[in-house]
Image (tube, rainbow, N blue to C red; front, top):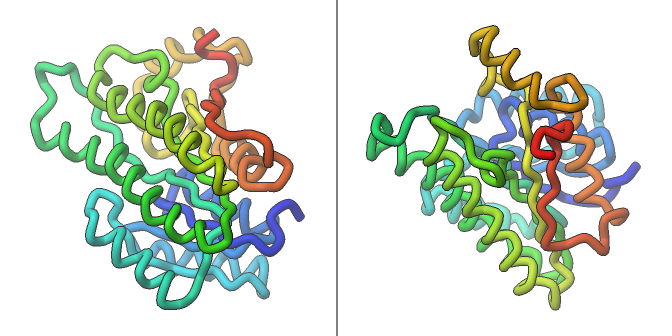
Length: 248
């Protein structure tokens, strides 16, 4: 198994992409630290993981990535338990579609506090943790709109674009400590974030995808496994698109 012996933290693990990544990591032998705001859902996921992998010692940590103190307390809990991370996937995010003129101050703050600041603060604490063994892998989730932009998503795009510059710069800071920092930029992935859109919305997006299908959470989790494994040990500072060719 590709992740045997590794301990990896996943934010926003209670649903969607985060849940799929956590399950895939567990199936590949990792001990997964499940983080999110909904502890009930996280405990249910832990039970499911341990049902499939009885020896897997999954850990549940309540964490709201939009709140600095919540992140701090979660990592303090890890420290007190002497848990050292081999990797972290900064997956938690929020998307509010609206033209700029219709975007509220609350929406702007929520997207940046969750998507951008949450990623930065989680990396800050994760790096301190990883320095104990002078190795690790950080994977930040950006978005295709962080690279290419999208009408009606200017603020969301900005919050995800900031992650790209942050990832590249942090990779240069951390390289000397053998800590790799990369980002993935998913395209149209079928999750609860994209559910409920109109048929016209789906058809319009499908026309722009050369592979002629939408992405799945399994596509994302497969890449995440590779980026957390030793097979990607010479990859850092990269922004990896996973979009079916949408931005070609």
